[in-house]
Image 1: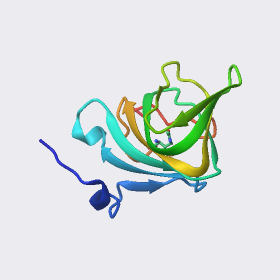
Image 2: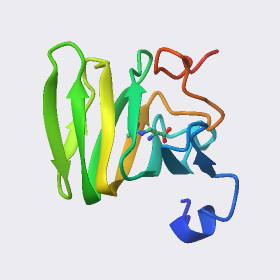
Image 3: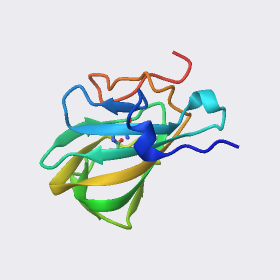
Image 4: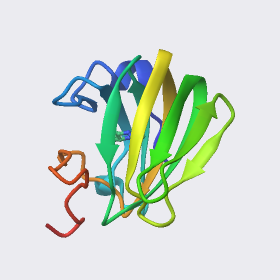
Length: 131
Ligand SMILES: CC(=O)NCC[C@H](N)C(=O)O
C-alpha cells in the first residue's frame, strides 16, 4: 500500500506549475506507481483560460472547491462547474477550461497514467504515454 499527503507532496517536485501560470497540480499517483491511472489535485487559478485537448488520454475531473466552467469547442457549449461536479472527457474533447473569481480546486484522474514530466503541447495535448 502507498500513502501520501497533499501538503507534504506540495513541498516536492510532485507540485508542478503550468508554464503559463494558469494552474498548478500535485501529482499524488503517477505512472511509476503502476496503477494504470494517475491522480492529481489541480488548482485552476482565478480568471484563467486554458486550451486543452487530451488526444491520448482520458481524464475525469471532480471539482471540490470553487467554481469555473468548461467550453467544449466543437459545439460552443458552456458547462458551468461547481463543487460536487465531475466532468469526464470521454471523447478526448477539445475544451477551454476557465477559473471564475475564486478559481477552483479539482481532483483529476488520467488514464493512461501521466509520468509527471509532460507539458501541455501547442494543441493542448500531452504526449502519448509511450513517447
Ligand atoms: C483539469 C486539467 O486538466 N487541468 C490541467 C492540469 C492537469 N490536471 C494536470 O494535472 O496536468
